Image (cartoon, rainbow, N blue to C red; front, side):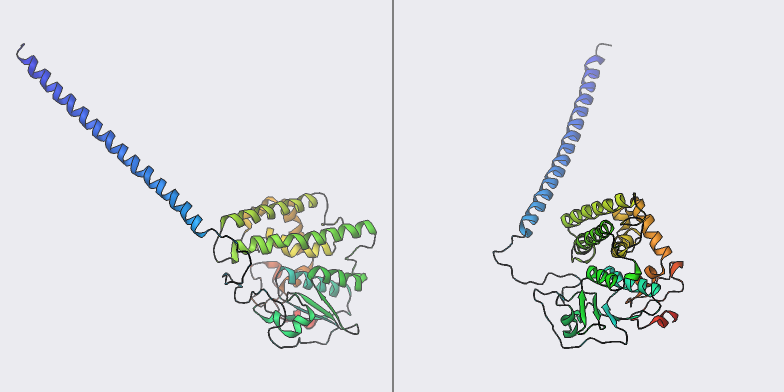
Length: 339
């Protein structure tokens, strides 16, 4: 019996030492793996910092033109003026519009359609201007030295009156045709209307030239500008939502050029038509803006028609509201809607 004790003791010692070495070896391997992962993470972080430092932009003392890429890189330049000689076409009506169906272009065409709805004798011509270089034609630059759409020329005056900047076009037409009742005459209401019109003119730069550019058109996606301008656009939507929580229309109880100015940008944004960004910006949370945007589109034929003008890229076949409204690249009279 006692002779077996040393053997058993020896056997247990072997097993114990084997387990000890096995556990330590396993622990060592885990530590090595952890060390490898830690080193890998550290190398990755260091590499990111090195890349950022390597590609960090330091502005030169004097800026020089460079090819930056992006959708409009081929026509962008730091100089103004005509690049080719070509006069503007002129139709038979006094009012001539030169534009494209962008949000800024929509403002002018919605306004013109509102005038048609009120005044049976009124009509106009709307010519398509593609912003792939046609805005630098000599005739267009003569009407608008800034080479941006839309541009309106009024041939009822002598000499003809050139009006550029979409907000200026809305005010000019509202004052020229006061029967449209789209610009209040009472001082307080007028000030409110013009304040919201100018709010749009100043704010849309951040929506289009800021957020839209970096979210859609920039050659690369950069986190900082997208986050910066997304935050500002959401703040703007909140400003508009708070206002429309108190009023039926933007400026109060009546439809005005303030609504015409804001709808093509912020109305279409919350309806999911700008930059495919409705989900990203959670635009459905701005319920009062959504209510207002749908109301204008459903209740006003001029809004629907104006959206379809100077629009060469197709009709809105997915929306039953546009069932009988074609897209028109150009417009030269009421009969064009019967196409």
